[in-house]
Amino acid sequence: MLSEKSRPVIAQTLGIIAERIPHITPVFYRSMFEARPDLLDGMFSRANQKNGTQPQALAGSIAMFASHLLNHPDSYPDEVLSRVAHKHASLGLDPREYPTVHEHLFKAIAADLGDAATPEVVAAWDEVYWLMADALIALEKDLYARQANRVAFAPFRVSAREAVADGVLAFEFEPADGTPMTPAVPGQYVTVQVTVTDGLRQPRQFTLVPGRPGHRRVIVREDPQGEVTPVLHRDVAVGDVLELSNPYGDVVLDPASPAPLVLVSAGIGITPVLAFLDQLVREDPEREVLVLHADHSAAAWPCREQVREYVSQLPNARLVSWLGVPGEGDHEGRMDVSRVEVPADAEVFMCGPLPFMQAVRSQLVDAGVPGRAIHYEIFGPDLWMLHDEARAA
Ligand code: HEM
Image (tube, rainbow, N blue to C red; front, side, top):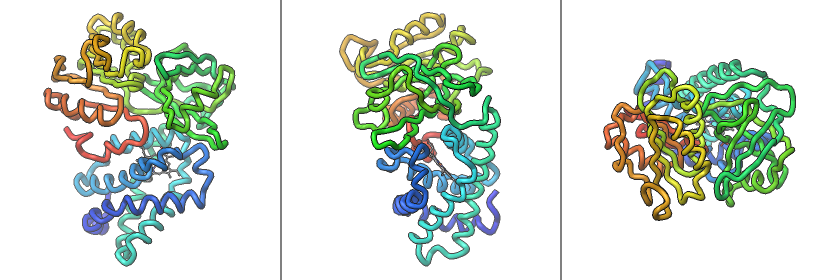
């Protein structure tokens, strides 16, 4: 809980800090990577630094945390902390790095605010930082303790690779040493370390899709402008060994809930849907499920046949598609949820590009689904979670 001493100081300075974040973050990251270039090797994504999403996510989440402490003094924003802790743990973040971020972030804040960074202001923000850091450290410690091994990454050999749609490959991995594998909960992801063209290791998270026992399977759409997916598509062959993390991620089904499910995806966002459908076939085949998918075309839709196969094995499931090519799907063009009947008591899981999810979320809320029943997975740093709109009831 925030101390009574810091509370009014945070209330007074939250506005200015939030406004200055875009100016503070580039200075913070520049100074941190100058002092610690090793953090760009296998830890931070260089692409997310370039496009600015990660800097905004980290500093923005601290401002969001401070605002939560002011408005709800007795609680923490658990959803946000959980997402960040899972992402951190998937990168093997060591708690001893929290002082590193603290040092460079606070140096940048002091430089930006100048005289306004009085000792009182700095002490209050220090308190916020460590409240958040300690909450994350505790969650991460618990996540590490739940693994079947004590390593952040283990070597896995590519045991198969195959095309599953235009421009989309599936990679299957088998353990390349004796490290015990933590079983994944459907919907979780692993971090894969890829050595890119200049020799730097770059981490990326991929949702696990159903596969053979004792293996990990992911599907990867090539982004020609990307730094990692072209290397995976072009250079990674059967027999190659890559480092994979344990499985993490908190966007998973609640097995105790009987609520009807609505699974919404676009493009490569089909990956958690595949994992959920496989789980339902095995564990809860009578569940009422509505699967909604949007894609450019039938050929671009990853694992289309597999999705249809799962749906045919679930007596109370229905699949509705929106495809860009006339006549190929149930509907043409963009997803329009008003074309289907969504049960008001449904639990919704979405995965796809952010503008797609924002549009569908509004449609669902208009259709009477409460915001708290809408869950989403986003690939890359989540800036949406920093806005109440993404979480509000
Ligand atoms: C990701 C917050 C400390 C390394 C993130 C994200 C947030 C965040 C909001 C984005 C999560 C997502 O949506 O995917 C924080 C906060 C911290 C903190 C509030 C301190 C209180 C650290 C430290 C390190 C670190 C100490 C390591 C030195 C990372 C990395 C990512 C990440 C590597 C992945 C993002 C990427 O490069 O794409 N963090 N973080 N964080 N954080 Fe932290």
